[in-house]
Length: 342
Image (cartoon, rainbow, N blue to C red; front, top):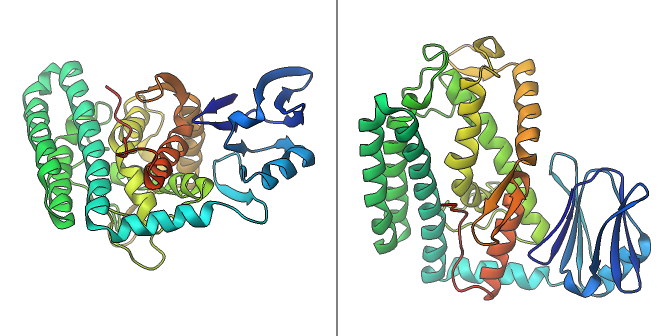
């Protein structure tokens, strides 16, 4: 699969070759040409897995400040090829300037939280339609989340935004157990517990959230942003605050629904978990393998992107949102648009 999105060429087809001919980038899979795009249309090339990029193309991109970014097949950042001078230092400067500007930092924090709350509401709305026996509590939770959205917009500081986010998360997880349809006893969910997870569903959520955070780190590094300089999460040494910010908009609509699908379709079973000393629960080695296999399949599923008005693979969503965030920090966009499909 090969896509040009937001002036970035994403090459996911394994063993594809990417070359330059007469100011045009050619992508071939075996003997078949799968894409042809003028070089001047591209701001970056992102290659996932085993993709062969010719040296002349890489050199030309480096000379003109066009990033060539390499990821492994799981989407983990590996390297960025650049020339003698690059624009990433300017982007990181803009990132830190926005962090130090109370108004811009607050605006970005609000965007991440608004995206999270709206997407959580969409999950519960769907649940209220599909599960009429639980429509009343799910609908009440939807009303509470809807009421929280204008409060986010009116919040005066970061602490108020974080307080609203925490309240909304509590409302959401208070009714989350209604969405568990298969083996409800074994996958009973009472409250969100993280360090350590106290039940199977919490263990599954924590594992998937961790993978998604790593994906967001890779996406941010891919566009040249510092994953540790965030706007919603407090900065701490070694903490990928910006990646944690970015993953918020994907939690309910992408990650939670994926976990619920695994449970409700019995693709993951109680036997795939291990109970540890102290009451913690973890996925077994076989369980982790199952989740990773299904997650890779899920990342290939295409969904409609509300801003681009076209379908894109789920696995590219963090990369697209990271690029939109970079554009916002550079001033190309007035406000950051979180991923919020209708």
